[in-house]
Length: 398
Ligand SMILES: Cc1cc2nc3c(=O)[nH]c(=O)nc-3n(C[C@H](O)[C@H](O)[C@H](O)COP(=O)(O)OP(=O)(O)OC[C@H]3O[C@@H](n4cnc5c(N)ncnc54)[C@H](O)[C@@H]3O)c2cc1C
Image 1 (cartoon, protein in one colour):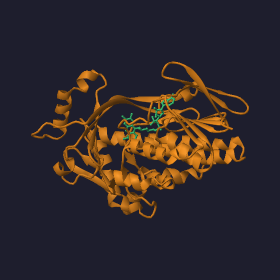
Image 2 (cartoon, helix red, strand yellow):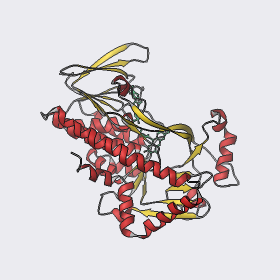
Image 3 (cartoon, helix red, strand yellow):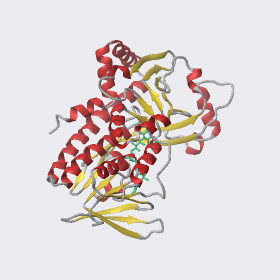
Image 4 (tube, helix red, strand yellow):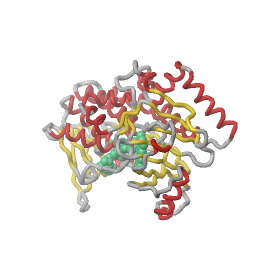
């Protein structure tokens, strides 16, 4: 029956990993995506080791590696003094099949997953379908979708996964709170073909650069460098994004005789929020719909993919007869990670980068130096930042 399926709202990385996981279990899915095609905006680009281990089952990792950039090391730097601590994933070679971060844009993954799903007759993609309202009864879920011309339609399924991003209409329709805070500064992301690796000595492909006045992050992808700069939210957007202002800021980061070429620019607000609940009856939240955090550490998309697999493994068991109450463990496990691991680590990363107090700053940087110098602490730090530890700790959550 066409209605006996799981409806997934949102074809981002989280929605499509959930779809691929359910499809692999032989469960029919319908994916409702608000846009006309898969979004191709420049957003997350860092895949952590356990996420690559998880994605292996869909056969996409070799192509991701081919199109991406393997980064065995990453570092914290001081803007004036250079490298403070260089972390090396070789320390966790025994803990993962992918002892590196992979820099690969999220839009590449969603296209690869769509290709994997395209030949499966039990998977339906429905574009131009903006989820608006979720209604439930004893046997299933009805999603009202809005078409671009304003007309309404409905989709019926046995269960529903809201993977429709930070502004999730599913979350709002289910009346689930999304408490937390908004970070005062905006984050400006710029990408450039400029070869920072030739211009800055000992620079790794991922570098967090601490400074009491202006910290920044440098991330390299296969073809470009991305620069993330905190930005005064009061600056008018037309000034902030103007060519002259961006050039001045690029020159401030690294003076260069020639002007910089900019390929993409985006300024965005950053929130730290976790949904009050991940489950409402037959509907579940995952990814940005359930939690958002600052991008320092690259944990948003990775954590969302971990949600998708945890959720769908349990939902597949329920589909095959396990009681729906067993889904509660999904919320207990993944909400705990969002609150106690991802938010805390992302906030800690921000405070290392923007610390203004000289004493506190020195203490942070000395601690980082001591951490990489000690093999036991070095490995433990990488297990945490690569999100392996959060997955191990889940086993203890009943
Ligand atoms: C500019 C920017 C830079 C970022 N950089 C990083 C980074 O470096 N590292 C990192 O880890 N994270 C980063 N993030 C966050 C990261 O992109 C998200 O954590 C990740 O995309 C979450 O995936 P998702 O599938 O949950 O949601 P999304 O990727 O937001 O996907 C949601 C999907 O649902 C669709 N949709 C939305 N509303 C509806 C609706 N009502 N009905 C149907 N479909 C709908 C959208 O079109 C989209 O396809 C960044 C985010 C932004 C905005």
